[in-house]
Amino acid sequence: MRKPEGKILLRTAILSAGVALMSVSYRMTGAPRAEAQRASRSEVSTLAPGSAARKRLFDAMRPAFEKELHQKVIFTAPTLRVTQGWAFVTGQPLQPNQKPIDYRKTKYWEARQHGSMSNDYCALLRSTGGNRWKLVTYHIGQTDVFWEDWPQKFHAPPALFKEPGQP
Image (tube, rainbow, N blue to C red; front, top):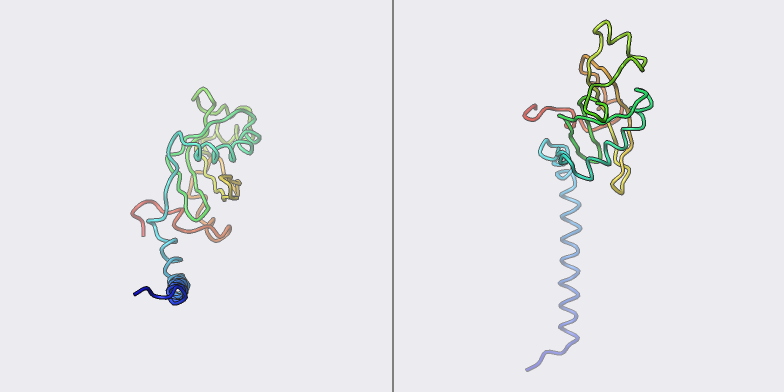
C-alpha cells in the first residue's frame, strides 16, 4: 500500500528541521572549542615557496621595503607563518640579483658600519580578503626579538610568533 505523499513530505520536513536544529546546536556548542582549536599551534601553516599566495604576500611588503631601502628588493623567508588571517615573516631582503642590500643608499648605512644592525627583517601582515595582504608593521635590521610585543600591540595571534614545538 502506498503512503500518502503529504505524510512523506511532513516526515521529510520534520527530518530536515531536526537536522537543521542539530546543526545549529552543534555550531553553538562547538564555538568555544573551535576558537581554542584555531588558536592552537596545529593551525599555524606556511605558504609554499614559489606559490602565488606567497608572491602576493611579498608583493604587499615590497613597496614599503623598496621605499625605505631606495632599491628593488626580493625576500628570503626562512620563517613564514600564517594563521587566522595573519602572517609573520622573517628573513633577509636582497637585491633582485640575489646580492645583499646596498645599505650605502639608505638611512641604515651608519648603523651597518658600526655593526649595530643585522641583515634581517621581520614583518607582520593581515589578510584583507580576496587573497590580498596588508603590511601592518615591519622592521629592518633587528638584532633582538623585535616582534615580542606585536601580539598585544596589534592583536595578532600569539601562536604566530612561536617556534614549532614551543608551548
